[in-house]
Length: 378
Image 1 (cartoon, one colour):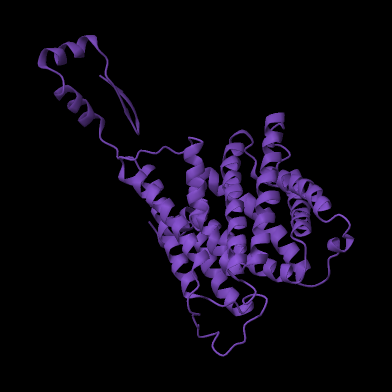
Image 2 (cartoon, rainbow, N blue to C red):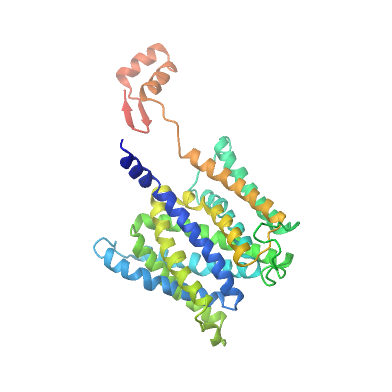
């Protein structure tokens, strides 16, 4: 294999990894810009509406042009699933996440989101999408990882500890709104909102993977989700912000930048790329990279927002990451079933049968052995 062919194969196999890393960088930027916009007084309800309106305007033309010949027929069950997708992620998850972000810090919100893979695993077991065998070490790792992740989230919420001084934060005056205003009450409130949002987000991930099987058009599905999210979020915003027309005003500052950025990158592109990767690798692979977002936000938050970093939250974040990868390891091992050659399986079956029965079975019985590469009959 030549060097160029090797590089081509590397980039081909690495596409899913590059895609999810790009999504996490996008989410990290969202946490920083959204925190600034919310601190400046922008309504989270209006923010969600404008964000998905921008995403709809960007993604709809691509869906109309690129999917005009391959777009599946819209049916009532599919449209109902799209309405539920728009309700779960754009409306419920994002509003709760931004409310939790407003009550805490960008680093705290990103770290709490690391419970997403564990919640997705629990929901998959409840819905029987994921099988659980407590006698298997892989299933035990998944359960232990889920418990560890929840424990890490509790540590991060309840423990504070001393401030950790980083080399770029020494001698700096920390932003009052971003730090001193975050007490235990706000941490608990924010943690609860973000956790409930993650439950909704997990439901969105599972339902999106199911919907793509009957509506295999990622761009069109993304455009539909953004459009319905704008409509459903608009209804909620009109109710929550009634009598406050000033909440709908948007200025040429960070609020506009946050709206455009999150709409294009974190809704339009993220939903689309997430769907592409999910069809190949599954939802667990997509959620496995969420700790990367926490690391990026922690660094960017301390630099841009002057957020303080506490020892308790660092310990909690480490525990969350450890539990997360226990879950991911267990899931990945379950997908790699050991394959035994067909001949060996047939010999093993014959050895378990008495001599005469074995001979008779060659003439009167058919033994079928399922293998990863086909079915053998004797």
